[in-house]
Length: 103
Image (cartoon, rainbow, N blue to C red; front, side, top):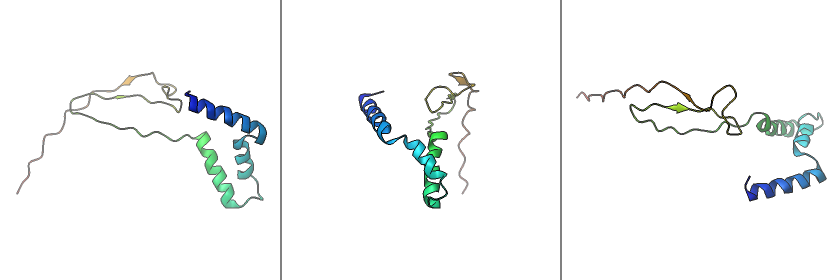
């Protein structure tokens, strides 16, 4: 963890001791029948990011004739459970021939 992240974490820990855990507050809001439905929905939506992290996009640059290697990683950037660090797949097929333009 870099210094900026560590400073934020330390600050967060101090404030959460004083004011409580924000995730608990979100749960209280999301399931309190006296809170407006739009606020409950927003709190539930925010809680989803803790349970279901967003999937990172990948960029692919495939050149004809080269194979591809896929590594599935979890939110902690380690290989996903049940997969080895490198699972290699079959070599890509050769590129298709260029199409002729018929006039």
